[in-house]
Image (cartoon, rainbow, N blue to C red; front, side, top):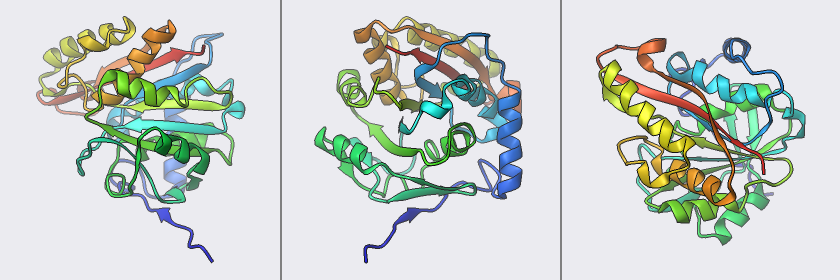
Length: 267
């Protein structure tokens, strides 16, 4: 019998609550506090931050709240993010069969995994095992989407905007599929400097100008550049949903991290 391989949470109890009931309440409260304009269209892709929920959770919620009207139609999520602990060159997808959070298991979509491999991704659990950037997205997805959705986490590093755009395009715009890019913005500046830098980054994202995004502008810069380049190619609008720093939520104003949420219009 084939063993069912499950990635256990790396940051439950640190980045978000480890107790299921507490985690449900926290995510639901964050989503309830996120304002969504009447008639806002359902996005094909979201850009979301990935810090601890007390810091970036309100910003992430503004993105996930955009799925309220169409959540039942989303059955697959392909999430692209950086590596903070295990360096890679290119893209890596998990060998595991599922990822777990305190809210339960989410299956890894094997068809999507094979598609990523066909486009050059390695199958490697090592970069994913300690990584928080994609794990922290799962509880939001578990509370917003219908039970039974599948996911493909993709770690991305050292790829050009064009190469990453090609990879994202292998999944983008399909019925039932949502693309998520996980990134924080500027790191460890004073609050006013961070806000200035992040405004510049947000302007480049909305203008679909991947070349204007420098490596110090975002920790998930490779995936972010790829999505921005793909939106440019497809002439799709990118909307800024929220732009804040840890100083605006729960952090030290002298050493802050920036957070942005964006939505890419559906084709």
